[in-house]
Image (cartoon, rainbow, N blue to C red; front, side, top):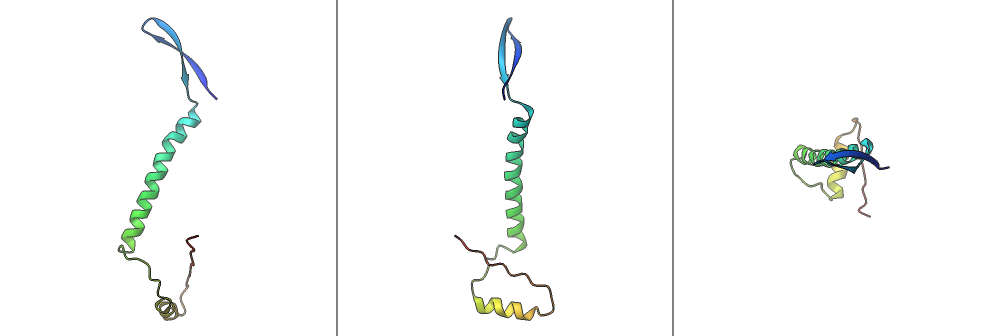
Amino acid sequence: MKVDILVADEGLLSFEPRLPMKLNRVKILIPIAVLLVAVLIYVGNFMTGGATYSTNLSELQRQFNRDKGKVRLLMLLSPS
């Protein structure tokens, strides 16, 4: 939805199209969301020390069994 605003410019009157407030908010929120995601990725990398996750299943099983009696969460992620 476009709203035309009457603007006086150097003695001439012209209509200048203005975007509604909701569209302006979206233009502001998108960069903020991208920045937030980047910060979360950086903090996540910092928390793990930059170490990659192991793909060795025997190591995973050993760690899983070592934490007996604790709450454990195992996530299997597929790249496809």
